[in-house]
Amino acid sequence: MSALSELGKLKGQGSKSEGRDTKAALVFLGPWLVGLVAITLGPMLISLYLSFTDYNLLQEPTFVGLDNFVRMFEDARLLNSLRVTFIYVLVGVPLQLAVALLIAMVLDRGIRGLPFYRSVFYLPSLLGGSVAVAILWKQIFGTTGLVNQFLALIGIEGPGWISDPNTALSTIILLHIWTFGSPMIIFLAGLRQIPHMYYEAAQVDGASKVSQFFRITLPLLSPIIFFNLVLQIVGAFQSFTQAFIVSGGTGGPSDSTMFFTLYLYQKGFGQFDMGYASAMAWVLLLIIGAFTAINFYASKFWVFYDD
Amino acid sequence: MTKLQALPTPTSEGRKEAKLPPRKVSRPRSPAATRMRAILKHIILILSALLMIYPLLWMVVSSLRPNDLIFKEPGLWLTTFEASNFSDGWNALANPFSTYLLNSAIVVLGCIIGNLVSCSMAAYAFARLNFKGKKWLFGAMLLTIMLPFHVVIVPQYILFSQIGWVNTFWPIIVPKLLATDAFFVFLMVQFIRGIPRELDEAARIDGAGHPRIFLQVILPLMVPALATTTIFTFIWTWNDFFSQLIYLTDPDMFTVPVALRAFIDATASTSWGAMFAMSIVSLLPVFIAFLLGQKFLVKGIATTGIK
Image (cartoon, rainbow over all chains, first blue to last red; front, side, top):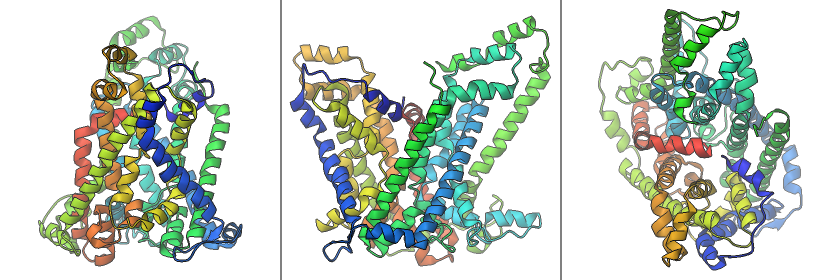
């Protein structure tokens, strides 16, 4: 069903040598091959090289060895941006998936008006990545914003959520949770695959709803939860637009919304420190790779494949 | 598993009630209690759905309010009607907003054509052709789905700026013409695999080569996959901010997201009404795409499970 399981299956396949269509393959794959080399692999290697250089676009890159990577360890703003990004990913992704699963379970089993609810819950995930919604968010959580207007109605004077370093990141995490619609749809599709007789049998045996959830729903849904988890983590590490717009491009207040990608943008395209930015990009790739690897390893202990 | 099978049928409920003695956990509920529960569930769902879209509704209403009222009215009731926000916003920047809409439309159209042509060709090769190294290339394609954009952005920027493409739409469109959106290649491979090979064979016996089989047999049958690709490309490109921010710095070339960002800088927080009005204008195409293409969006997510 997914790109992930597809990767796993590749191991076992052997290629048949009879009846090759090499000429046709070159034609059909041509654009993709050019893209792979010129747009993806080539630039990857070049950015790896640049990460060991000092380069400002104007002068030729000069080789500086591991300098950029050493600098990172001494760069307090960079270390802070890692902290901010980790909080965002480790809090935002699980919460978003939990909400998605909860709503998907409520909507499952042919509830009346399912298409309506599904549409309403799904819509924000289509709009959430846009600049327009980030602008809206900036207002909602502003000092005189929508949230504080409601709080004022019940006599509470709310803080300036976005201007306060203690709460600014939470508003962006909330925006991430708000876009739970697409994992919800994947969960809905997954829940439909669980045969209803399992629940009937459990009911006959007197299992409570809670133990039905932990012993039927969760194990049978675990491959899909895992799949969502991997993809959402990969995606969340790359979030940029929301933090950029909400903080006005600064990552403020006090660097509290300085995402790693935002700092990379500032270094690369603000200060044209392209060597450093490339090194940062590779660190990001390694972090995402490590998280994915850990996820795959940990999946052995909790993901249940029913075959 | 079809939708029907997942539904609890009245007969199975009835049988269970008849056979089983009441147990502590799965006690039989009276029809009235079941009804009450259903109503309660719907009330909670409707309330949470409202909470989800309230910010969007409020933005629509606020775009029609005079500026001084936006920060005083948390409700959705419109007392004064200020349509001038739209004309103010439309003309607030160096160019009328139509320029940015047109630029975004050009970029989106280019990306859609690029993805449709290049991804379907690559997908045909992966799904139907037999060639050396297919396994490895397919694996590489799957891996690029998860590759963070930032790892290639610096060298890509250097490349495109050296050939003078900054402030043109090429850096955004050309990668799509080269099938770098591997996600869609994967989606189409999955789809083509579901088309019976007998159809290819029949065409081959009639003397058709691969180009004709692709154009006259496969393409007409994969229209649903092409529709899903079109809608996702439309929404993602329309919302995309990072690459458009980097490559488009000339106000004449601004797309909608970049223009909105410039709007924040230009008007600070003085004209929220106008800013909301333009935000609504920018979200409208995505909303329409959502309404028209919901079926393909939901299907696309449920079968391939990304975003």
